[in-house]
Length: 287
Length: 344
Image (cartoon, rainbow over all chains, first blue to last red):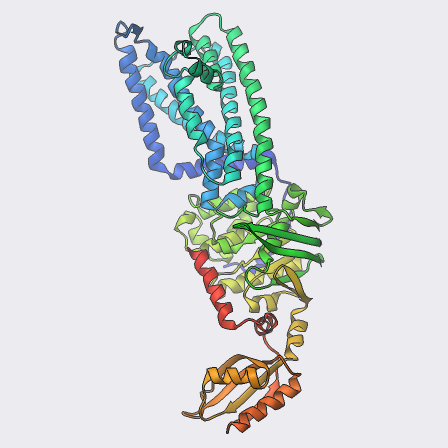
C-alpha cells in the first residue's frame, strides 16, 4: 500500500483549463458507458428495431402489387424513413431535459452544474443519445441487409444532403430540449412537455402519412408547420423520392437552421435565468 | 490562494418565512491557511461554503478568491475543489464504476488522462479501494462512496479545498488517512483549506485557525488553542464523594447555588459503593475563583468530601459547546440525525 509521501510527487503537475471539447467528450463517454450498463434495455431496443425491419420488409417488399385503401404497399418504404427518424428525434428531444431531470433526481446535478455550461452538456448528452439510438437502427439495418437483402434506398450521391438535413433536424430538437430544460430546472420536476411535444411530432410531421392530408384541418396543419421534423422530412422525402430536390433541401434546411438558431438562443437565455434563480434560492443541491 | 469575504448576507425563504443563513459576514483567509469552520446545525457554514463554491449566490456582499470575484463562476470553479460529504456519495454516477466516475470527473476538471490515471490508481490504493475500482458505485457502502468523493476532490489538486464534513462516516483508519493527506496537501502545495466538521478532534489537530459561526454571524475567530484557553478560564474539574447522589438534583444545585452548568459527570470505578465522582462544570454567573469556593462549600455542607478541585483546559468540543451554551446530548443527537439523513 502506498503512503502519502509516495503519492504527492504525482500531484505536482497542474491541471489544464476546463476545455469545451474535453468536457463534451467526457460526458459522451460517461453517458454511453452508463447506457451500456443498462444491458437489457439496450438489447431490447435493438431487438425491437430488428423486428421493425423484418416487418417492413415482409409487408413492403414481398408483394408490391398489394394496395391498402388505395395506397401502394410501397408506402411502407416512405413510412420507414419517418419511423427510423422518429426514434432518433425522440432521443435528441429528450436527451438534455431528461438527463438534467435524472441528475436532479439521482443527486449528480450539483456536480453537473459545477462543471458544465448548458451547451456543453446538451451537445454531450444528445450526441451520446443519438449515437446509441442511431447505432441500434444501423445494426438492425445491417442485419436486414445481410439476411433479407433489403435494398439501400438512396444513392451515395445524396448522402451529403441527407447528412445536412439529419444534422439540422437533430440540432433543432436539441435546441427545443434546451428550451424545455429551462422549465425543468426552474421547477425541478418533470412537467411532461417533452412527452407532449414528442407525441405531437409523431402525429403531425409526416412520419406515418403525408402531411398534405392535414390540409383540410387548420389546427392540425398549423401544428404540423411548427414542428421542425415536418421540414426535415419534406427535405429527406424530396431527396429520396423526387428528382428536383435541391430547392426543397435548401428551403427546408434554411427553415431548420433559422428555427434552431432562434429557439437555441432563446433556450440558452432561459436556462441561464433558471440557473440564476436556483443559485439565488440555494436549491442547486436540493432534490 | 487567498480568500476575501466582505459583508456576505444570504436569506432563504422557507414556507413564506425568511431565514437568515448569513448575516453580514466578513473574513480574510490567507494562502495556505487551514481554517476550521465550526457552528451548530443551521449556523450558516454550508451556505458560506456553497457561496464560495459558486453553487449559491449571495443576496449582498462579495467574495474574492485570488482577487477574482465569485460572480466569475467559470474562473472560480477552476481554482476550487468542493466536497460536500454529507450527501453520502449521491453526486456520483451510480451506474458507472468507481474508476469511470473518477476518470469522468478528472476530465471535467482538466486533468490530462495519463496523469489522472496515475493519480486515481495511487489514491485508490491509498484508501484501499483498488480492489473495487471496477465495481459500480451503486454497489458500494456509504463509507466507500464518501471515500470516492474524497478522492475525486483531490485528483485535480485544486488550489482551494472547500470541505464540508469530508470524513463523516469514515472509520478511524480512513479518517486518519484522510487527515494525513490533507495535512500534506496543505503543507506541500500550500493548498488553502476550509474544513467544516463536527469532528472536533479533527478540527483541533488539523487547523491553525477556527471560525465559529452561529445564527449566520461570526462569533469567534481565533486559533483553536486560544479558544480553548479562553474557555479554560471558566472550566472546573472536581473529584468528590457524596453519600446519596442524584444527578438531576446535583445539576439543579450547580445551577441554583453556584450559578454554573454541569458539563459532564462520571462515577469513578475505584471501589464498590465508594460513590466517588468526577464532574466538569462551567462557571457562568460568578468568576471562577468564587465558583470554586461556592462549589466546595456546597458539597461539604451536604456531607460530602472534595478530593481535588481545580480549573482545567477543556477540549475543543467542550469549549465549543460551552460557548454556544449547548448540551452534549443535544449535540450528539444532531450528529446522529445528520448521519441518518446521509445514509437514507
